[in-house]
Length: 138
Image (cartoon, rainbow, N blue to C red; front, side, top):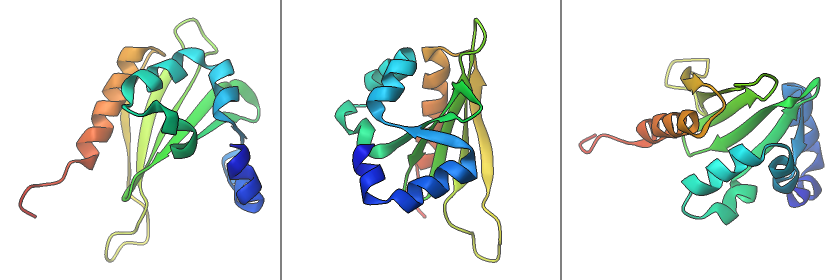
């Protein structure tokens, strides 16, 4: 995160302003949301890349509400949720990163959602994998 902020302060500030969030370092996010961080570490083959691949943030007006943004070549995925209640909440969304021919908007969809628990994260990540698969004859 320090590397991200030092390399592009303007972009970070713009992201925080547009999304009404405070971007956190991986270590700070891990302190605030240890369960979610551990679930992500368990899921990824090379968890040491989490700090370089993801944008971790909390809502400016609610530090128990979070977003984790992941980019692929075609899509932007967002994990979002909160730990404000006993069961909490975890959900996901997807948006195209490029317009489709003839369109002037980015397509988007909701991904799985549910209680703040590992099983919900696994359903969301299964949705992510489904979006990233391509037809074998295209």
